View 1 (cartoon, rainbow, N blue to C red):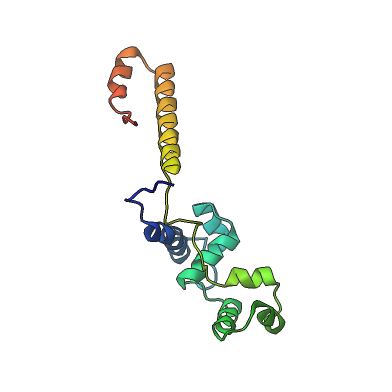
View 2 (cartoon, rainbow, N blue to C red):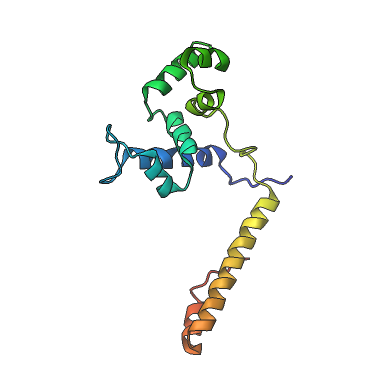
Length: 155
């Protein structure tokens, strides 16, 4: 598979973590919990992830500190298995995994294929054509000529 040299997987892997943490730490009026952090259900509406994913990202960044997550992570750092942690704390195996920081990022994020780049360009072209079609259907011909210069040339 051909790769794109300008692709930075480490930078891309940090983006969702930073976004979730930023939203969580900067709550707006009426969205905060007792600790002053944004409630996870409100964070879901802002960045369109489910609560489990947001919690996992925030735990990975170190910003989420609830007694259960602190205890689970402490036991995990001590070398306890997930089954042992379950016996000591009570939550299900799935819940325990949810409270542990992410160990992986997106599969093969260090590589972007030529096909992936082609698909990105295709989506951009498709959006440009849709925008042009919408302009043609709603504007007069003189305005269309002016607006054509605003649509990016996507090759």
